[in-house]
Image (cartoon, rainbow, N blue to C red; front, side, top):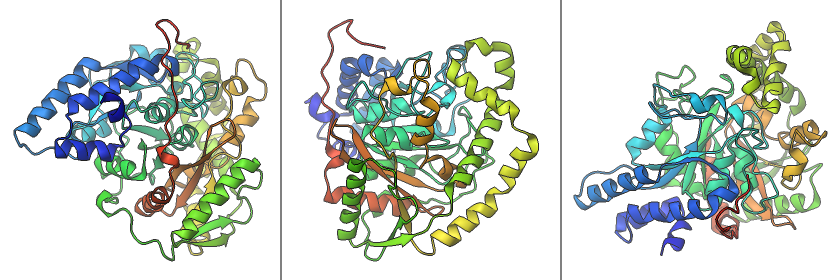
Length: 480
């Protein structure tokens, strides 16, 4: 029974608990069995809290038996990127330095998951200090794609995408500063939602870049993402960027009519440089949305290259400021790729950084007025090529990594500068059986519409139901 339980969606697991078809202890046990069997070879967990998770599950089951009020995620096993602080618990932040760091505060996201009754079974792999879209980590090693372990998961929420796809947890929370939710979700064949900037509190978690960071869900379906986002969204006075005091997502209302919804197809960049099998998968996804009642309309996007450059200025300058003290005192403990990325920010002139920040509202307003008067959402590729191999992005072995990284983030990083919501979902597989995903971009606070579109797409396709074929390695056979 455990094997079948691990393949449920979060929504199915929740319904089964409510109907008494199985217990929370059984769900947690099923997930822990998957972690034990496949966690070492995929390298997606930093720490596993098996005993604590089973104890919480037993408590959740007892509360249900007593008929007590329970939260919306009561008894559901999840795991989060190892950058969300919990008071008194080590948070590695994907780094050697973090392995000694014990926070004294708890992240608002974790407090909200606790209130909803979710059970954390551990913390997940990430790029060092969330710096890097490939998932490379000199300290933890590469996290491996469950569809093909010679390939990357994407980053920086590498463990989140991998663990959800490998059916080790029903959902996860990651961070996105330039694609760090969308890339690992898309590369691992699951659904990831980057919310509007400010919708989810960042309080009590490791900052990567104050002006760009957002937190959001990675799960197996649009409905699962909606359930997670419902639990963690909302105003928080502890986060200066939080400015949304009312709720924006209603999981119970997914699946609304899509007739007449305008899906914008960029004339100037849609799949223009994509590999043929990627372009074919995206065209097929458009056909599905058209069949669902959407109108596919041409749209001209502003040149995204200058916006991409502005994102880089803000990201590098703020990362350098955040890490200046640690880099000066403990620079040798940083991995080489991370240190190189951080130190580049010291060479950005302050006037250039300030200009990049002050130009943001005007650029966002111009983008929204020119694009979202023509379309309700815009479809973009996530990646224009197949998911790269680990050997191709290893900065210690390959000289072409910067070009590869730029191509990986071409369609994600500039969206973070604008602070707009975006969702990714699987729409096919390459010849080497690696996921292909599309990305939908919306106007501010259009998360409900983005989830509606993917939910309807899932009703008409089966890509999100595909499960990686994994074989447990014998004891001692895992690779790092």
